[in-house]
Length: 501
Length: 109
Image (cartoon, rainbow over all chains, first blue to last red; front, side, top):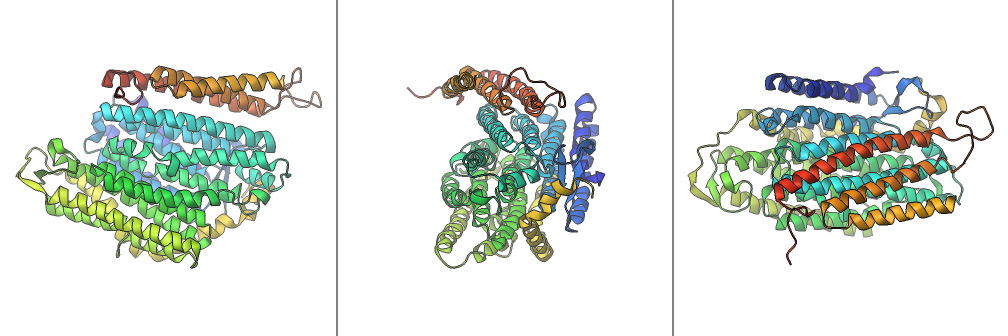
């Protein structure tokens, strides 16, 4: 067994506990601990990605209880990719936070580490109930992080977020209960075998459990009927938290991808790919409504939150199409959209700091102190997120558009994605011209540009050209990921041969 | 026994959903609690409803499935923590917004 598999969970857990017990440690010690633990996750996740790229599944049986009896962690190419996306984003978010945002409330760094523990665990686990537990860990940390800094807006947005997610958890438990009651197992690979072998009398109940799970994951991923909490929550969160939350919606998308390719995948008989027909219209409508929200947004944070809804719709369209090409396009776009949305949330905070009481509202305000620097970063982020060449959003969208055959699907996808890009661009241009050009003569001299914050923000946004430069190896990796995802016999072996590598 | 169990779950869930749709934070918290009771009981019943069977494998042909009990225990602990958190957050919300309306402001009359 490769013990490195559990490190992405253990490292944040121990550092988080240490930070919690050492609540009286000085701020510099806490910052150093948190930043170095988050920084350590980056090489660790890249190393795990190299391991996963060898093509075998790595299975870690906790307590050496052999599957399907014990809980297992599974590392495949998809989970390794998600770990890398999380660790890089988290490192820059932590780098931003240590420049002062962590002092606005107690225990920021401990909560940040527990949040990472939950996210990494959700990506690694191979057990459905364990997925629920890790969801709860990441959620309870996110509840506290969301209200970090306090204030009326945050508490009110936080209350909605908490209540909705508690209802989501209830649905998750119902679905897990039904699946266990019928199949007698919770191991995802074993579930795949049992669902494929289920009789026709069990199919309706299994289907109901599958749809219940879709509601839960849809609430996390925030697509059409379930995204209304997102703009308020993300716009209210403090900058490093909002940046880290960029990966939270992707946890929902990951769970959709995992459950509906493995358990309800190609070999699930009458239930095979049962959600694709639902996801397809919902994905397109999510893009449309996200764009409408972006056009109507009255602050930069709200605009970025709605653009995140747009990117979720685009990703979901790639997943719903279900072809290998569209899935690999969606995975490439996922990496891009997570990092760039995170970077833009940090940039929005940098801009808001120089506008005093006007903050990030899209109204005439004082002149910025560094209009050229921030303007250039905003320009770069905007064209990346709207999907214009030469940055990474363009490649992702191009691959997605290229993956559909001419026909009805293309006739629906092309106008929605391209129109979504155009209207995102209009909304961003309007926001940019208000923030940078429709300004008064006076400058606020209270807010200095902090170079540490700038470094974190620019670092995240500059990953977009890097993604273009490294497009060839990344695309080769995501293509292999998609092939591995659909090779269900590989996952079935987990149960058949046990945890021994 | 099944019918009684099902009716109890139904009443718990219906009451929970009704309370959840109220506009004040306190009924919403109580509603969430009722729903989580219903869900925990449902999860428990997935090990099948039996009385008088042994708890340890090997002493009889029938035994009570221990796994749903473990799951329920985990779910209860998590639900407990979440309820405590949401109560504190609701109190904080009353402190910040001076109202116990779920939206943080009284709806326009």
